[in-house]
Length: 490
Image (cartoon, rainbow, N blue to C red):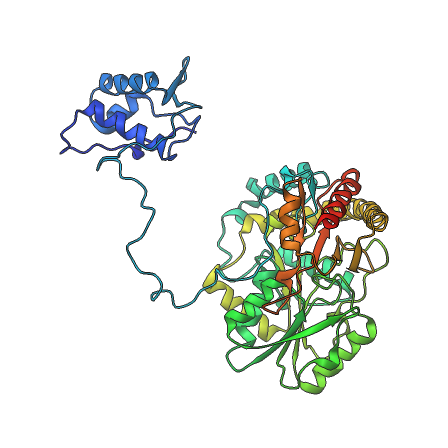
């Protein structure tokens, strides 16, 4: 990348020479890592014209920086920040102010709300650098259709579909993507919805937040699963509503334990987060009966239903709903890749109308190019081919991991009856899986401690989650062996 000349300026009142100012300006930027190794500096001609000085002044400054190891030259290419440029901080002048690292403002009384103290599952951005990444929700690049996605993105960028890239949809969504969801995606879950009952969201988390904003205020009561999805717990905490965590057993949420004053119930019936158990049909019907009797709304997060390689996924709660009480949330982030951040909300028109208005005040709509690329990927059959490939791979990994866990005597606390992508594990009571995760990371193994999934401020410390969506099948047994060894030493 060539650095812009607009990054360079001179202090006309400085008592140093122009040559010294340029040298100090460039050196300070390199030391503070604002100019990074390999980046190209503007040509001496362009920088001289920008600063209004002679070209020889710039050239001499560059040459001094080369001599000191800050810059390097390439034949007929110009000057670049040296790969081994110094990193010690030099004193800076007024012309090159240092980055302010501290604020003189006391932010404690000024911050009226705080969100950084949330208990969430820690994520490793560089998980691919580890040989045994049992991490949940990441896309396996060995399975993804890179070439087909690139072609669909290129098509969305083409002249014929120019509007999908450049138009401001205002409060609307890409009609092609909405049509595919209505005619292909939802019917597979037994759900029939009109386009006016579907709203695109920036992933399932965004959908949950909008529902909470619309249905819950102070004094309203929300019931949800415990253990459960930490992101939902934080959304409800921010909403300021009355929170009623419902204990989950080996069959999921018990509808008869929903408090009488509940207005909204949040559930993951197909694949409970994190235990992965599936809510039986009897409990699904009972939950809908209770909803009708007590006049509460059910929010169904139907993530990962596509990964049904052991048995067919159970019908969605929304497909059993005859009163219009179920709000359905789906996502392409789990089945395509998490960075996509594209989901959808299905609900009666009055709620969708308000959700659309709420969305417009925050982000208007998900990026049009992402919507159209996804629509192309779905419509051309690439999505279904990807799902088949993922199901085959997950089925093999599931079998391999189940065998490895049994071979090493590790305890499975929960797994999806239809498939899924993870096992919910329980270590011996004396094992703290936060400490275990730290010890395993040093050996190249990533696991997810289970404590953040629990509502209690002092949760059980011996649960953890092992996902097989991102690890090669050949590495599973080796990774499980390391986990077993670390637990034995704990």
